[in-house]
Image (cartoon, rainbow, N blue to C red; front, side, top):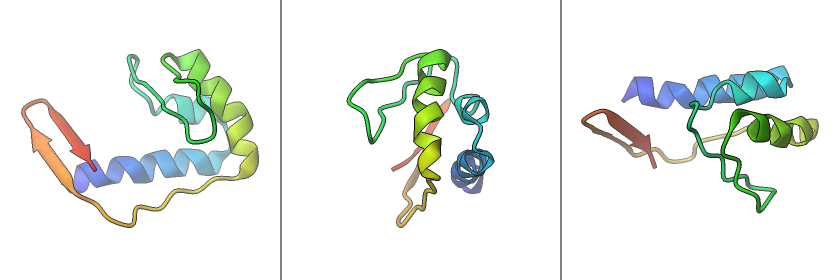
Length: 79
């Protein structure tokens, strides 16, 4: 569970760099980003990077207020 929670910290640290490529690299090759300030799903590296090109100008930081880690066979989530 700690490893799953740590993934968020890695993503949040990527935000701190201000580099959209660093953030986009945190997503899986087949990852999907459903952005909070856009209604366009991002389904590949280039579109995820494009989103963060402008989003990072806002200097975002995330905070998890409640965590509920679920681990299954070959998958996990923190919901």
